[in-house]
Amino acid sequence: MINLKSNSFTIPGKGTTTGEIECQIRIVHLERVLQAKREALPEEESARLALTYKILGDPTRLKIVMALNNGEMCVCDLAAFLGLSESAVSHQLRRLKDLALVRPRRQGQTLFYTINDSHVAAIINIGLEHIREGG
Amino acid sequence: MINLKSNSFTIPGKGTTTGEIECQIRIVHLERVLQAKREALPEEESARLALTYKILGDPTRLKIVMALNNGEMCVCDLAAFLGLSESAVSHQLRRLKDLALVRPRRQGQTLFYTINDSHVAAIINIGLEHIREGG
DNA sequence: ATTATATTTGATCAATTGATCAGATATAAT
DNA sequence: ATTATATCTGATCAATTGATCAAATATAAT
Image 1 (cartoon, chains in turn green, orange, brown, red):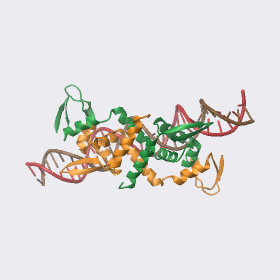
Image 2: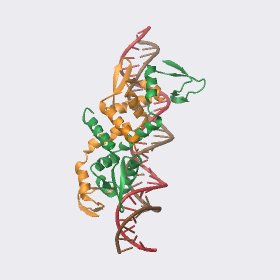
Image 3: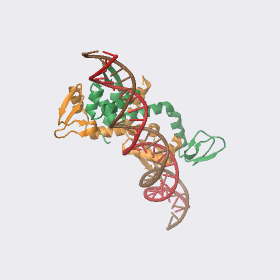
Image 4: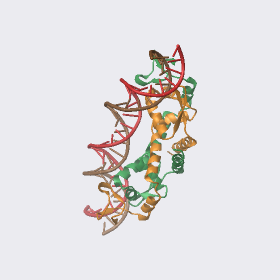
């Protein structure tokens, strides 16, 4: 147990410590905690990364991505494939597009969606390896 | 527009088609839809994969995983690092453990958590590459 | 045995989420 | 211009989620 005064640690129920508030945070290995703080990604970047996984972390959206991995598809074909309304698919495609996971190509009235870059397929392949062994 | 009778497609508001219900699903490229159906992962597997990403897709959990990527840490140190209650951290560790993303090692009363396998770090590295270029 | 320490567990609740619906755009055809 | 087609958008609502709290284990120390 280590006593901390006026540093940058945030205490669960009490917000961030400022001024002379004396607080007790249980830290068993201080160096380890400080190292984690030092090496942590900037908040903005880790938030973005988390959001990327979150977007992949929905069955409908993941199925979309995996289907597109075999070639581009239009909204209505995806809807037929998934058994969902075209509106639902469009909503999900927008979220995937916002995170640069898929990308549209317009041909007349039809929008064909594709995987945006090679990282997406790579993430999925490694994820599959993970769940297939030991998971 | 293609007319389908009594096949295995599911129609948005009407459940899965059975018997003689005549339905109209808009399919522009039937081969593409059928290919997607053929090559889709078994439902159970894609659900598991989605869940894996979902679990990584929360800022708190992702920070935990990234911190552990630099070496094992105990629950209370993680709590101090994150500025969260130990209970909150424990709850999240459980979810990470359930998906085999982290793994505990007991030493007396203390539980040290580690990244479970190399795939986890790989997924994160590729995710980072993705958001850092073009994202 | 009793007490202290480290973590886990179950309940609660505000906040977020995903599919649907109705209506809005955007492009093409007549 | 009008109509049809393909997709998008905003609102709604049940269901899920994450942090907190209080209480329960589990291990260690006296």
